[in-house]
Structure formats: C-alpha cells, structure tokens
Length: 627
Image (cartoon, rainbow, N blue to C red):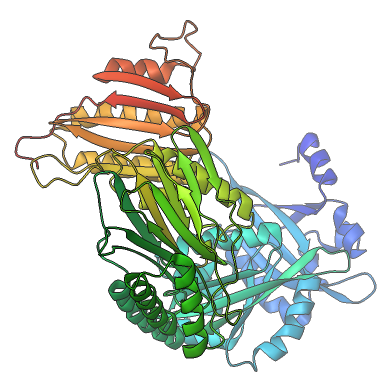
C-alpha cells in the first residue's frame, strides 16, 4: 500500500515526528521532522533498524511491547531512549494506532514520536528525592499523563505500575469526588495554574482515606511547561478531627442562633446562614431578633474573627450581652460601646464586627449603630437598592473605650432592610460585583411578599447556589403588608422554587432536572409529563437566551393544576408571540408557539428595571390520591 501524496504532504508539514508501518510492524515511512530532531537519517528508523539505536537497557522492553501490540492489534505507547547523531541518548515517546479495513483486518499502522527528554530528566532528579519522602509523590508530563509514582502509591492503592500509568489513577478515586477532580485537574493542565484539592483515595483493602494533593508545573527556560510534580498527603485523621469539631460547632450554632424570629402583620423578619466550604470555617457569624418588653424590636448581626468551637461559644456570649443591655434600655450605640468593653476584658485580642438596631414599636423607624460591619442595603419597590451611607465605626475589640453613634432611619411600607456578613461578598474576587448581585437579589424579593423564605432566596441568588470560602449570614426586615406564603399542611403540595444565574448553564440544567423530578412525583401519567417537560425546557432555554442575570422559577398550585412562574432580572422580552414563525427553518419564536399549544394558559408581565415575569399553567393534573 502506497501513501497518498496528499497525506504525505500533510505529514511533512506537521510539527512532530510521524511514521507509518506495514501490518506486520515494519516501519516504511518517517517524515523529515525525525532527522531535524534526532540528527539521524530516516533509514535509521525504517524496517527494524531502530533496534540498533535503542538504549540497551530499554531494548528488551521496547521490542516486547511493540511486538505484543502488533500481535494483539492494540495501541502502542512507550517511552524509550534512542541514540542521537552526537552519541547521546534522549527519551522519546512512541505512540501508534492500527488502521483497519471494512472486515476489521489491520492494513497499516500510523504513529507519532514526541521528545520527552526534559520531562524524564526532571523526573529522574525528582525521583531520587521522592522515594525518600514519607508521602505519595508523582510526576506527569505537560499533558497530565502520569509517568511516575514513588513506591508509596503502589503500597497504598495496590496498583501495579502498568495499572497506574497515564490516567490509571482514576480507578482509586471515590466516585463522589471524581467529577470535581476531573474538572479541576484538566483545568490546571490547560491553564498552567497550580493544582490543590482534597479528595478520597481507595486503599488496597477498600477503605477510603482523605488526601490533600498539590501539584506544580515545571517550566523550561522558554516558560513552557515540560512536566508536573505533585504530592498526596494523607490527612484522614485531621479530616475526621475537623469533622467532629464541625459537628460540635454546628450543634452549638443551633443552640445559639434563634429558631424563631418575631413576625408581625406589617413586618416580616427572616434570616439565613450558610456554612463555609472548608470544614473548619464554622461558628463565627450570627444574627438575632427579638421583641423587647415595650414593643420595640432588637436586631443584630455580626462576624467574629475566628471559627470553630471557640467562635461558636463567643457568638452565644455576645448575643446574650447584647440582649441583656437592650432589655436594660440601652441604645444601639451604647450597646456596642459596652459590648466592646466586655469583649476586651473577657477575650482580649479577639475582634468582631457587628450592627445592632432597634425597630420602633410602630415599625416606622429604625435606630442602629455599626461597629466595622458591612453597610446594610435599603431597597423598595420604587427605589433601587442602596447601601446606607452612615460611616461605620471601629470593630469591637479594636479600640479601648470606643464610642458608637446612633443613626435614625425612617422606613415606609414595601421597604426591605438587608443586613449581611462579609461571607456574602468576599467569596468573589470582585467584591463590588458581588454586592451588585446581592442588591439585585434583594430587588427581586422586595417585589414579592409571597416568598416563604426571602433570606434564603436572596442567599441562593447572590451566591448562584454556590459555596463560600467563609461562613455567611443574612438578616432582613421586610416592612410589608404582604402576607408571607406559609407552607400549608392540607391537600395542596408545598410550593417549590429554584434560582440560578442565566450565564451558568450547569445550574440551569440542574434546575430543569429538579423541576421535572419534583413534578413527576405528582404526575397522573407519562402523557402529562411529556408535555410538561417540553414546556419547562423551552421556558428555561428562552430565559437563558433573552434574560441575562438572576432567574427565579416557582411552581405554585391552584388546586390540582400547577402554575410555573419564571421571573428574571434582565431586559427580558417586550412581547410574546404565539404564532409559528413564517420561515419553517427559523427557530426564533418556535418555543413560545409550542408552549402556547401545550399549556393551559400563558401570560407575561414586565416591570421596568426589574425584568419579566412569565406565568404558564402546566397541562398537568395531580394523580388521584396524590397529596
């Protein structure tokens, strides 16, 4: 079989060594790149003459592996040292794949050769030290192909070098951790960023241990990555200790954070707390609200510079101090001044930020003081969310005998006062952008007094359902005549809501699956679900395309028939067209046409500056006897 001239021309243009062999493995062509890299003529590689230039220590393994691939028809991949024109040896990686005819018979082999000498030299230097270290050490080439482990990997996993080579390490990973590993490790390879992650690896006896893995790239003089070098440290004992500490801290938090917040016809108080992504970071944030004997309402929110058990205990102490001082009639400024003095006396070198406020008995005025805490946001239906401009004063524990000013704020109905800890904004590199997301989320919530848990809604929207690097808390006071939607224990299913950012395709797809799964639990048959799945998919796709920003989806039940409500914070659509597009190939408008034909009803409402609300009655009735 002769090579096609066009193929040969392409092979000669490639920036790597390309070769071909007959079905029996005899090499019959190599491009000119071979000579440029090795200094050897093509004849040194053709037929079986490559045997003469292979390193004696590598020859036996190379011949055996190559002949085995030829016999089995399996791909060939091996690193071997070859003698260059100047007499020195360089490591070359040879790879080959068979080409088969229509009957599956191998008719030719196509291969490539890469120079991996720099990576091998670095690995050899690294390997001497790596074998002596009391931890798992490994190296990989620039593409992430693992080419060496020290003996501790094989002793721990029970794998053989052949099983572990390349991407064989995947078999040792815990299935719950593996998807994230396969997201972050390829990202590091592509960007050259250092890799660091905690995950579980299976021991040879089937037991999983937690490991901390770090890897750094090695670059040549030109800045190009030639290899990766990493280590796996067993942190299982520390992880278990942190987990125990976390459970204790969370138990204390459950005790110290209020289970119930005061509620009124014209004032809805809500709060939410989210623990940090890292196990040890729990216990430093708090919120509180309670009614005083004279009908006023005390509220506070704060963040202690510390985490874990000590912080959880201190949270309880500070909340008790603040409430005691308020019961004695102290103003917010005086409460913070006295708390500062007590903190410095009882816990020197401990710092905390806090806001303490009191709502008047008539619920028309708020007096508050700020000790180094992020400024609250005030938002109304007809006013954008803005940070209160009152300057914060020193954090608690910083300045001896510090005094704090009282600030008075008149509030009107349909106004929301949002207080939060810095974990809500410092998770992002751009704090200003995170604050804007928080404001946008508050603007969505203030327009809808029926949201059952508005603090959680704001938290989900602002964090895009993600995790924070620090614990975070939200406390909101919604001065509103709306009656918050309560979960009813009658025959009507509870409402469910989902929130995501339209730029996050993964969150949108996850929400779609969760919505369909939720509705399936009440389905009366597959016909209902088929039409419902189409509508849900089209609505989400339409929102992602036309409404950049925060999106909220809610399923509300009107008897046996559910309504899907989609709210966005983007410019949205100016109108809904229910007609099929004139051009049969035009996809624009086709989704809304399908929705109209399948749904019971569809309506749209646009609020300038606040996005669009679409309501669709789903063609779906609950099955008889379904709760």
